[in-house]
Length: 117
Image (tube, rainbow, N blue to C red):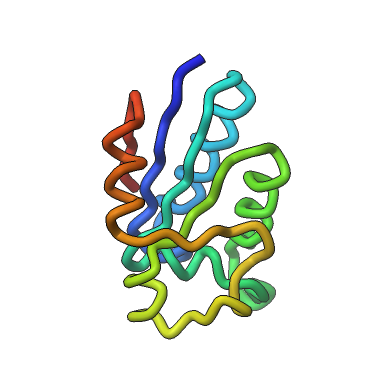
């Protein structure tokens, strides 16, 4: 069993990046891999609870993040990016962990494979 980290640095809507990051995370976990989904820069907005996509053509990325957590993907948000985006701990989807930039770098370093979206 290998491990993979998936780094999401783009906002959750407007491109396919967030949906693809989640799709790859779920695919890896179903293949018995250890999967870490790391949310940095604009990607931190994917961890904010209460997405309302009713007036758009998009499916909720929040649901995908919850599915990842439920299936065993470790989802972490980078603390500095979280602060820059004005996201507080109570704003996060349940199960998302907060990690420092140093911790994020170490996770990437220890991973067999890293994918960036």
